[in-house]
Structures are given as structure tokens and as C-alpha cells.
Length: 403
Image (tube, rainbow, N blue to C red; front, side, top):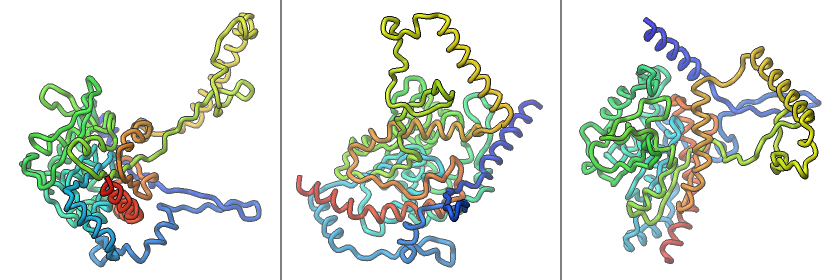
């Protein structure tokens, strides 16, 4: 009975989290009064592409692509030189639906995708495409992800090592393109990235059953149960390699296009409690942490130390009381999601150093962990970002041809 109650409670938490509608708010002051506006994507960018991205009668997304003769000539030269294009697809849960839009643009401009490596949701999209799923199939599958279907895919597990077992997701991926597929069956060389939870080692999976590798790569710690792969327990590859540029490079790619889904930028500012106000504030240096009894007189007097400690305890007590009274704060899934985002943001910059082109889809900052029903917005965000980066892709090709 307790297990059923626990599962029901977790399900309610999921409903609460997924029902939250993420929006971006901004304010405009008019005669001292604030007017609040809500947007879901960069309005100026969306306006720029209004005549190039069209939703057809069936609900699909169509693009108007102008022929780029310079790009076609450059691609022809790369083929003559034997240069390979590699695509590194980053992790980011629901934000990964933007990968579909990026691939859609690469296809439209006839930019070859010779090698793919993916982390987490990047391994999902990458493996399906490598297995032969068409971009139309990927788009259709993404656009069909309504909230009801997202709920269905969340088969709750006993909360020993994760909340979701992932069996239903495996079934969906098998139905789409991966059933009985091995890496040798794939049309495009592909690798999925996971993490060994025991040692923290990066695990590159490019042999055996594709579905096993993808399931390991998407195992978000605390959300999905880890995957036992031979003698190892594997979790999400984003823990160590959010955007697997290095893997694509090792697989033989000469020109690497990376798609980063990092939700936040690395934040290096340090916060400390201000002694005057008791509030956290940004500090430029950590001089206040130095303890030198010869140079710092306030530490010579133990009474002063006790007084400072009492003051800090009073501030802490006051803070706790404020939290208790408001009962506000992020829920469990927001905490896990944001923690992963922070961790990934810190190492994503390092992962991207060897990439020739980095594409960051528009609109991903408003997307939460399981917002798969925002597929249309995400695909459009991927399309717009990829189209804007076409000049960068041409630049990268020119540089490689000159080497």
C-alpha cells in the first residue's frame, strides 16, 4: 500500500511540474507603472524568419530555403578532398527536440552528415537519424509529443535508484527505428555517450544494440534508473560530456558542427553574506575569508568571534523562519533539472573548444525538463539558429580547405 501511495505522490508531483507553463516575462514602465508582457521566444528573431518558416495544413513545419551556390561549391570541394562532416548533438532533455530543426536545415542545404555522436537526448535524435528515420518522421514524432503522451512514457519505478524505469521510452524508440538495430546496421556512423556512475569515466558506446546504448545515455541521475551495461552502471553522458565534440573528432570528423542545449551560461560570481545587511551579495575577492591573527585584530578577541557567530546564527534563524512562513521554492524536478543545467554549463565550454561551428537553438531557456509538448517552438528555434549559422559553416569549410 505504501509503495502505491508513494508512486501516486510522485505522479502528482510530475503533473504539477509538467503543467507549469514556462514563459519569459519582461516589463515596460509607462508613467511609473509597470506593464508586464510575456514572450516564449526571441520575438525579433522569429519576425525575421516569419516568411521562411511555415506551418502547413497538416501541422508540419516547412522552410523556404534560398539556393546558396557558394555553399554548394564549397561542399563539392570538401567531397573531392574527402573531408567528413561530424555532428555533435548535446544533451538537454526536452530541449533536444531542437536538434530536429537543426538537422532539417542541414539537409535542406545539402550539408552532409557523415558522423554523429550524441549525449542524452542528443543520442536519441542522433541514433534515430543514423538508423534511417527521415527528418519528416522525426518531426512527426516530436510534434506528437503532447502532455498526455509524455505522461504515458513516464513509467514510474520503485525509487531505489531512479523514478522512471524507461521501458516505455525504449518501446517508443524501437517502434520508430531502433528495433533490433545494432551499430553495424546504422546508415551513418554513430556513438552514444554515457557515464560510469562508479568511476565517473566517460563511456563511448558504439558496439552492440543501439537501444541499449541510447537508454544508458539518457539516464538522468535521480530521474531515470541507471542501466547495467555488462559490469558497469551507466547514467546520463551529460555528467561528463554534455556536447560530445571530442567523440566526433575521434571518429574521424574534419568539420565539426556542435549543437549545444546549455540552458544557462556559466556563472562564476561568488556570493557571500554581507556583514552589514545579512543578505547574500556578489563579491569581487575572498579577502574576508583569510584568517590571520597577527594582521586581523578582530580575531584576537574571542568575545568578538562569539558575537559574530551569534549574529550569523540570528541571520540564519531569521532566514529559516522566512522560508517556513512562505513555503516557497523549486520542486524536486526543478532542483534536479537546474542542478544538471548548472553542472553542464560549467563544462560545456570546454567540450565546445574543438568545434568548428556551435549552434545554440533559440527559445531553449524557457524549456523545462519534460516540456516535450513545446516541440513546435523548439524545432523552429533549431531551424532559425541553424539558418543564422550558415555563414559560419561556410567560413569553417573555407578554413579547412586552406589547411
